[in-house]
Image 1 (cartoon, each protein chain N blue to C red):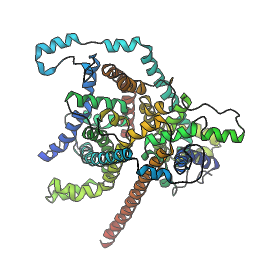
Image 2: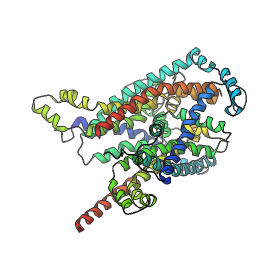
Image 3: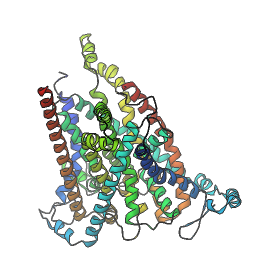
Image 4: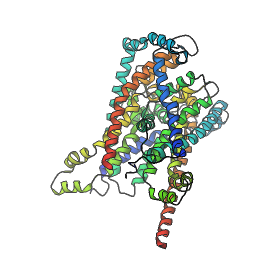
Length: 273
Length: 308
């Protein structure tokens, strides 16, 4: 009995997953609604997608958001990978517990506090707010997520390969790029994607740290939602959901393929012995 | 696996740089801002840009520093205790977050349990399906519920059509909508650690119980549940802590009488432009969360030691 799925398990999984997915499915369906009302079906239409193309403000916001997300995700990945290496490989040093505290605290810190504190920092140093301040803010919290993701990858891998390289006189930097990085690469990619989507999604921190001329897409969506629900917002949301879903699926397939390839290589190597 | 070396490794310049760069970044952009928040929470509001009077300026020398210190005003904190809005917000944030956490557990436990008891081949797909919504925008997921919960929304349409109700239910802009929003948004945070825990459960214990004639429900109550407690605790913390400071959910789904501290801080900052008071609110919120965060950290550390 326990080995097969019982009716109770199947029901709870089915209910749980429909709860998780139904709202998003409904949102996607109603983005194709002819009627202006979000809740009354008036026939199939793609007119809301067409009208998006003429909404210059929305397109501008999307472009700003995309640039911020790419830049902050890249910077966060570099910093986060460094932080993960420090956490796993650097052993003891003064202030280590403060360091790990600063890595884990932003993961649970409410957005409003992060946003407010960063804004006050920028005001204190007299930095005018806009594109760059949002980018720095996003990098700061995203690097902590990257650090955690990369760390879990680093913990699980065989240190002896690195040690062998170092014993053979390979300098540390070269060891990192030739050995460590290729092995933890799936973790680094996952970290980058997580940082990218976090930046793409963020409303609260961006609202605090932005300035004139740098309205992000979530801020735009938020202000429109407050005015009322329209199928046009559903259309924007559908596009975002599709992009993210495709990205995640592509990444997981790539990781899986790489894993299979590596197992094959390992088998071949051991077979040759 | 213990990768820690007991002896201090000899460090090259590169090794020091590796530590220094992320360390400095976090000190500047994460830790320092908190001190600024604290400093501004002690200053007075002013009609100026930025809208507060600087309390003291460290660059102005020791004498001025001492003068400034004597002028520090705790007025904002006194104000927080005098105006009922603030302590009511704190209290209702904790209550709403607590209730939502309990509901998330009630709903998430069967899902995690069902996943852990599924055939091994299904598990990676199911796991992926739990994580996927986490990747889609928080704002979008909250927004999706507005169309469902509205008076003329889909839920009411379906219920009216089924004849379950003859008056549309008012759900949107009430605390119930906030509960639904939090449970929905944070469900993956609870399911994932719980699933990781339940998956490791030694099945032979349950088989032994069954062989000895223990009914399935009792075996669950006496064996599975107590052993899964670390997963339950980790999951609950991961839901409760961010839910306390939540802004988007109470703002979009809650009503005007839904008090949550994240929303109060937002209004204080953006609508009233009172930076010192919103800083004071943030300081108190932080103090409120330090206790659960430290408890969570300790519990994680203990679990880590046990695994090692």
